[in-house]
Length: 84
Image (cartoon, rainbow, N blue to C red):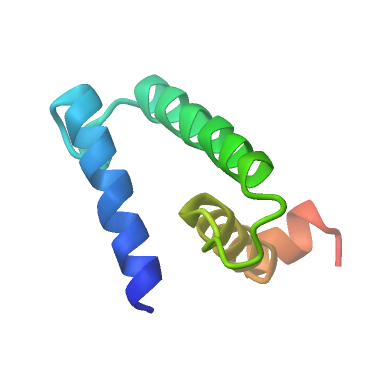
């Protein structure tokens, strides 16, 4: 829990530093650009730490997994996207 919330705080700080606004105040294109950079950063982090079993996971993997799980287990995600 501590690592998750710490990761969210770190993402918000990076967003604030890059755009002088919190994430939720950015327009859609800027949000997508920011998250694309975060995803690339997560890939680079994973590659850099592939042999380090003690390296904590990057927040992006955890956050993205939770968002996808939430969507695909919702009524819309299950009935429209998955045709359950």
